[in-house]
Length: 483
Image (tube, rainbow, N blue to C red):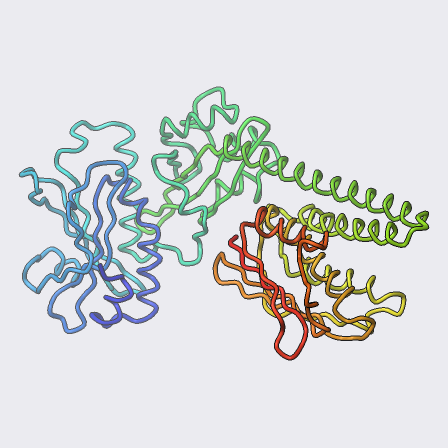
């Protein structure tokens, strides 16, 4: 099914401003379809004046549809529907009745769409003849508001460009509907709207009251955007959320005009109290989780400090070296928890962690002189990683960096390279040094650090690990894993 842009570009002579106007209209015409219980089809004139094209369509959520098949993208030659052509030519609405697919006859109307004093398209509005046999206050209020919006379309007063936000798409007529008069008094409030205001604290009836005054009394000075009285009494489109200790309501105000004069407003609203409560609970849980990560990080740093103190008291060099390695392992885990404690999700930017590990481990290995012996390099990006992947991977990198700096260079300098290649959820990384290479009797199981690496890669990360001689001298450790 072609889009409105496709049809406007290839089949019509409409200007860019005309097409933008039609886009604003179809973005907001679900309200008209729901208020009138009708299907809407936008018809645009063919560029060669040979007929009309159906540029877009919408079905109501408040009643049955007459559009059993999609019509958007179809072409109607000249002479096939006089009502469309008359409305386009005269700029006046054309009302009548049409045969339905079930054999009944339903009301139909063609509404001219005007912009800057010109009719640029027409809307066909058709309602099922089997729907809404009996009249009700709700139906009458809906239809009255739909009629005024249709008249505003004919006068070029609706839509109002630039007034829609994400909130516009979230509110529907069925969520809650209030119609006010020219002076702000409530003429009708749907049952859902009454229920929402009852939850806000309303004790009486809304009909006959000044909606701005009532809302101000219920929410005090706590509306999100501006005062409730100014919001609900505005003659411009407005959106806001109002709340008190009992409830939260989303509101959208659409001013109506009749015969060119303000005739009141249509207010759509939804009770979002439960949604806001769940959001607050999630925020609280996120804060609790971040605090837990922060405390874990602090505890790990305390453990590392105790191990460091113990190591300083050791006279055996091997015991002191073992405790120093333990300090580095604990520190790599603490680094991940520190990052998670500052994040609002369970994912971390692992590139920063990898760079810090490279600097920290090599700074210790290079001694008091600083990073003059072994220099780090990183190519590629890890991207976002979940915490359960980041923690073991940080330990793997710590061990590999430490092992290379301790055994690959034998007192000389060099470059330690971390190369990462991530394609979707698969990561391949290579830790390479330009040192002396692997010994002839190399066995990963003989080293505690490399045994830890093998276990973490294969068991914790579900990846593969290999040790390779580097072209030009040195060693490469290649790791592949799925995240």
